Image 1 (cartoon, rainbow, N blue to C red):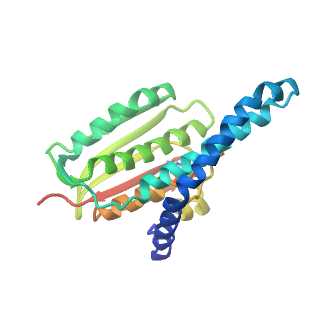
Image 2: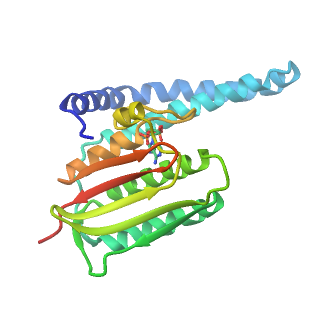
Length: 231
Ligand code: ADP
């Protein structure tokens, strides 16, 4: 699925607006959060602590959205470095493994036997892999039954350079979710921001790469990231 020019324009415009007003919104949010916390004992006495919990959770979500957007809307000339794709993936897996295990999921790397060098902004591309893996963990958690969670990370040569496949056996997606998942703010999660994949899309595109997705409801999802190799 390709993101359209319209979506990219929309994202760029929203990024500018978000960057311009984020600080102005953050300050009042911080004071609202503080005062709600002060009111909490009183609300508890009234049996309304649940309201305070929801308000705080929603303020935190608004802050997350602002934070993620500020991060993603900064001028993104990638700070490129030559790295081995296997080494990068091993590092990201190391970061995610313990959380994955706690959530009943195994991450398996099938690396390409030769060293494949790419020229990338390590921080940005790591963020992309992390975003996709986090979604996989959520999707695995949501599936019912006793199936063991798995994320397979596969590195292969591709006509464009290198292809990284991230495959999960989570809940998968229906057609309508599939058609919107790269849209800014599209989320099916109660506490989601809907920014992870739109930002990931932009980062990969800025690297001259592509990102595709295949998904089958109740079976799982695969993300394929293609990046040019250093020739
Ligand atoms: P968020 O995770 O905050 O919802 P994303 O942009 O990362 O934002 O994802 C958008 C939506 O795409 C998710 O809410 C979910 O519905 C869907 N999605 C993404 N990855 C997967 C996956 N691996 N399995 C199932 N659904 C997914």
